[in-house]
Length: 284
Image 1 (cartoon, helix red, strand yellow):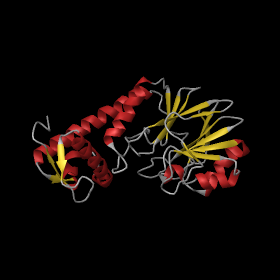
Image 2: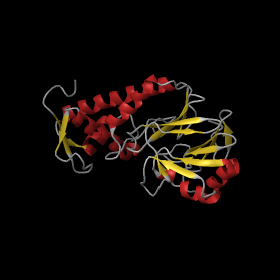
Image 3: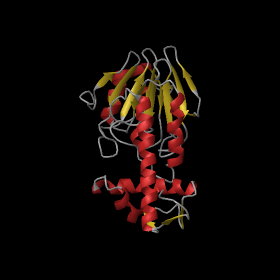
Image 4: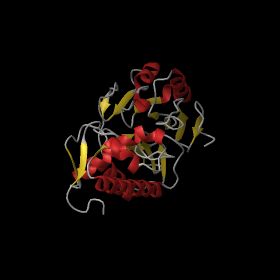
């Protein structure tokens, strides 16, 4: 990942450049990737955090050729820089996203199948709920390249945090990619992924295996809170990461309930809900 350096503009193809934002963390990995698509007319995908030096880098790379600002989701590490970036450029620059939330307000709301037709490229929006209910990926059809935001990232799996995050929707959104001609993934965090279908299958396999681990642990304990289940389910994860893992565990339990394999007295309460298996071979 030697080219993943904050503030450095890296050409990924004749149409695509990447700038890494200076916001590394446990949740963001090296930081948030901002992408510039196009040459004469530019679309910025995920302007990232509202950090002056990062916005300076975007303006320096695109300048008055930037026409559109698109976000994959309204989580602040992807979207909070959108308004200030537009203010630095021109009121004619259009901010686009699925909906208004988390302090993000688009000029235009876009949905599944929306297409940006530019002279040099064509971007298609794909609604991919799961990590966030308003998550969009963007397919650069000219290069069969998917800008995946937080749907697929490099270096780790994706956190799914209810109630907005939904494990069942996430798995469905992953499987949606199976029949698409995607040759490269440009993720919201981490390096470019050159074998996209293998990565998708890795994600699906991991999530289904974790689901069975959750079901087996719940069956063995019989009745438990999320926090009581975390040590049994995430024995392969450092204890320092358990506060993050507990939200994905909650997402798995909610999916098990949707599938009729578990039940809770307070499905929407992460801290107080008690879960138990439904009668039958839950841990099979």
